[in-house]
Image (cartoon, rainbow, N blue to C red):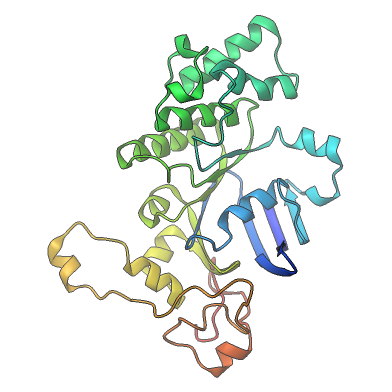
Length: 316
C-alpha cells in the first residue's frame, strides 16, 4: 500500500469581491502519495494556485480539512504550524516577484535556516554554499541581489530556499511558466533529480500539458474550482474519459506534420463562466458537447470509474 502523505477532504475556499463572493475551490477531494509527483492542470483562473496555497495554509480554507502525514493542519496553532512548515515548502510561480529585491542571495537562502534555528555562524554559510552548489549556482555570487540574475537563475535560488529546511513535500506553483522554453527543461530535470535523491513529494501545478506528462506520476484536471478527472499519467493521456480532459489533450501540438494534419481537434464553444455567477449542475455543462438537461441541473458525483481513475461526469 502506498503511504498517503497529503489528504484533502471536501476543501473549499471562498473569496469576497465587494458585496459578492465566489468559490475559487469547491468540495475538493485529493490524495497525494509519498514520493510521487501529482500534476494539477487546468485553464488560467480555475483555482490551481489557490489549491496549493490553501493546502499550506498560506490562505485559510473556508471549509474542509487538509491532513499532512495524518495530522489535521486546520487544528494547529501558529507555533505548531510554523514547526510543520519545515516539512512543507513552496516554489512560487514568478521568480521576479518571489525574491526580496533588497536581500542578497545569501540572505534569501539563509532566511529559512534562521527562522527554524537550524544552523549558526560558519555552519549556516556552509549550508547556504551547499544549497547553491546543489542547484548549480556559483557560490561566489552569494552577495549579489536578485536583479543581477537571469530568470532561470532566480528560480534556482527559489528552489534552493525551498530545499534549505529539508522538506518532505514541495508545492511547485507553475515554477516554469515565467521562464524561457530553453530553461524550463533544466529546472524540471533539476526537480526530478532532487526527488530521486531526497525522496521528495511534489504537487506540480501547471497548464503545460506536455511538461505535466513528463514529470507527473498522476494527473488531476481542474475546471472552475472543481476536479474533473484524476488518473495515472499514462492512463489519462492514452484514454481520457472526461470531455474537458479530451478537449485539453487535443490541443497538445504533435511534432509530426502528417499526424498533426490528420488528427481531430476538439474546439470548445463559449467562454469559461463568470465565477461570480457559476452555472448550476456540472460546471462544464455550458461548454460540453455531451451536456444534457441533467448536466445543467444536477452536479455529477466524483467517483472511481476504473481502478485509480476518477471522474465527475454523468455519462462516463
